[in-house]
Amino acid sequence: MNLLTTLWGWLTSLFAEAPAPAIEEQECCEEECEPEEECCEHEDCEPAPVVVEEVEEPEPVEVVEQASTTSISAGELLREVLLSRGISERVIEKYQIVETFEVWYEGPLDTDTIYNSIQAFRDVKGGVIKSKLSKLL
Figure 1 (tube, rainbow, N blue to C red):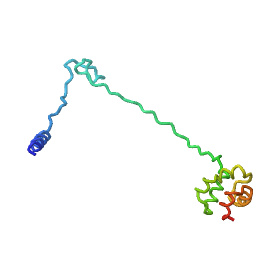
Figure 2 (tube, rainbow, N blue to C red):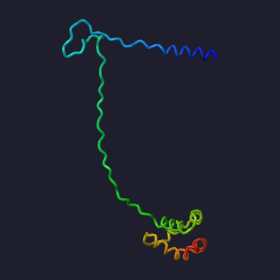
Figure 3 (cartoon, helix red, strand yellow):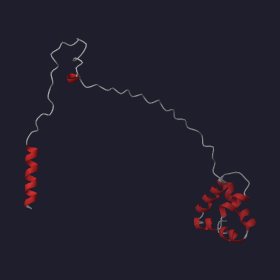
Figure 4 (cartoon, rainbow, N blue to C red):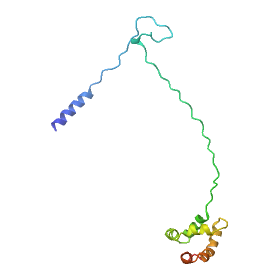
């Protein structure tokens, strides 16, 4: 504890005193300088060079919105219909219903047509797919 008190006292006394100014003003040498110059060209009184960096303005960015060319697939529409009708994602994935439907289906891509084609799909594929989709209609 005594060591901490000593250290604290030393630090507070160190920072309590105002520091002496570190920059001393230098006067230019006794020779006469040109009116355009700030000081003569002697090494001991030459002013520090000023560096000016030019920053270019960024070019304006034109935002172009493109119409989406990708449409939703028949399988994704079927997935939405099945999920909305209570068929779980686990069942859809386990029995690969979406993949099988995409191979089988050839029709317009709208929700009503997809929903109406489920019965025909179920009857054609039969088996597990028929039993899992039987509660839809």
